[in-house]
Image (cartoon, one colour):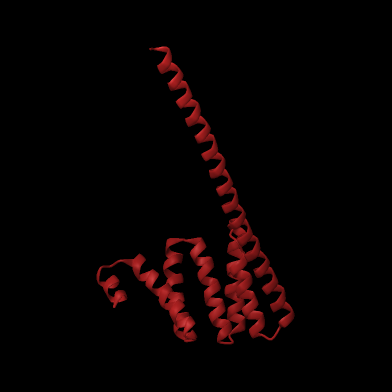
Length: 168
């Protein structure tokens, strides 16, 4: 397997990436206990690397898996850790809000589940709109630059033509 090869080659980064991918795969298959195991291995690696954004993200994944396993108290701890890291490091807290949504939903606290669902959804929409807005701005800027380049090219041709005629 790829994991075995990564271990043989002593490639810790590849091993960690495979742990994450296996966690995602097991979560999709609803094998939550296995997913948790792989996510925890990935979290351990990212903690050693002090990779705060990956630690934050992985805490949300673990929280969601724990919610699916009805381990709400533990899910809340990981969601809180993700939110705290998001706030301390200026990360977008949308994934932490998603984790809280799943935890509150598992606890049958639908009022708070809805609150965090809306927070997550609104941040996701804002992020999407910002990206779309940036794309529009990029296209406009590129179009403006192409117009300026065309004008400059025409002026250069005109100058070269005029200077060429004067030298005759």
